[in-house]
Image 1 (cartoon, rainbow, N blue to C red):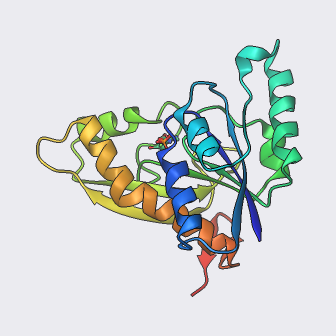
Image 2: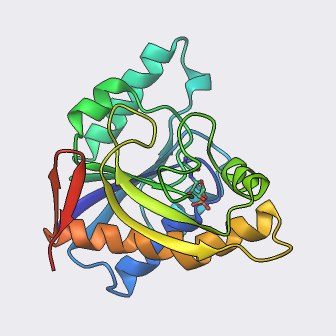
Length: 208
Ligand code: GAR
């Protein structure tokens, strides 16, 4: 059974997609053992509570230095003894020690087709604003392993979504979530839980 910790900062719709997929067996061999938020007001925490999943807030605001926060965050994660960490809209820079500890065991959902519209400063609505400003006709989402860079780790799954005439950042964000993120994040977890994903250099191989 793959033990998963999900890390969140906001609404938690991706968390909800994972919870639902575990419940309806779209994701198998998996248990969500904890949810960690950096934001005490994140609706994602409510979703965890409603589903009986242990959850907690670890906020940088509550610690004197970034180093202390980083240590506390890592301690909190380790306490769940997870096999996989899922960053589902977690908008905090991951402590380097945590990246080392969970190499090839931490994944992130990003709301663009990497390597477009990713890296420092590209998160949430900003990604969709940039895509519309550039006038691209196809956008999408990516699930990837987390490495030392920002959105640079091995790509696991991607899904494309069409931009429609008249889209706003908000309508585009919603369509990318519905058509791409909420599908590929659960799918990636299921693949990992069933031993179908291997990493070779900066690429993944997905077994049939
Ligand atoms: C999602 O669109 C996710 O892809 C994005 O934040 C949103 C969180 O929504 N993540 C990033 O931009 C990471 N760079 P949610 O809380 O409803 O799942």
